[in-house]
Image (spheres, rainbow, N blue to C red):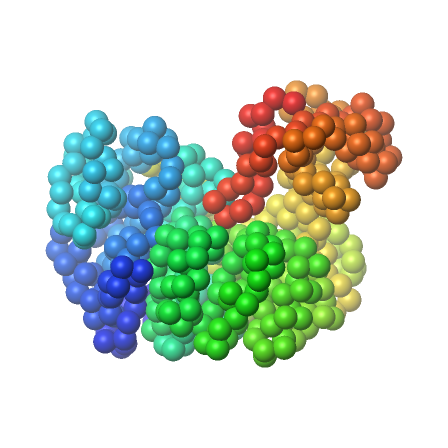
Length: 475
């Protein structure tokens, strides 16, 4: 069964419903797909300026069914960066709000209108033969305006979706909610699995910080909540009872490592109500989910991200590329499987390339297996630096300083290989204290560290620290 090819199976079931009371059934999705096919030629490249609305999602579903190639950019991306990507990739069609491209020099023709959203045809003469397997282009994490995209195939998305559906037991009775941007692979995975299973999505642009979100959440009878670490930290602060309705079956967490103390709080709370909390590990390049920890084992395996999905093989390699078999020995996490992406693209020509990875992904994450074969993540290989010959794990330094009560982010100094930059969120000058603490935990002289206080530590749309933005701040 191909992804979204059996929409008729669920006919009048609700597929998408939004906070404006708009409803699309599976039959409606089928009709939209048929109409779209009459307007757009097969293997066309469609740029989606995405927002969390039923028009973006329904057209994405149609594009997958019709074998078009979808390319996602968040609506909050700067116009200049969007223009750059449009000129670089020359999409055949653009789906965006009606007046979004008014000041754009690109000539467009309105072909179809969906409320405030429109399908526009561009005047680009794009004769590039897109790879027959290419399905979706997602921006790389933390670089929504960058021309670099992750190339995902139909098989990538289908295999990963099937594995997740089986593991989480997603059915036509399940409903989730859009609490993350569509450009985020985790959100797309939630959409794929629910629509594929005949379930539904409540579509909203409200954030979890807004009362309206929780009013809609309860009214829509959401059965599964999916979130990244910072969302759970917020919910712990303001009350987990917001999520806990009689309809909720389970929660999932991915998009970064959640501190063990938060995992314990969430797990202990929901165990009382017999609700399941799934800790997960994933990357956009893996379509995106890689592993799950069985909720029944959380107390025994605090800090673990579990074991691989059915069609994912995981192993650890040392810096020489040799497999590590000894438990508790750190190395780079490697995976193989049919959900591994085809490669990156930085221009239109790259979209004609075949699979460049042969099903193998170097995750860039450092981790280890325990004696029972459970995976633990310690940090990022790209987040390592050498100071005076000593190899430092920047994630580990961050973690220890944060644990001491300071909110910080660390990066290597690109202008001085023997220095680490530390940014902290506080109006009070704490530089000397933080530098002294960093020196103590690393056993490296204070002169190796520079420190700067900032109003806020920049984050990506998924809530992760945006290290690229930190590099732009003078320290």
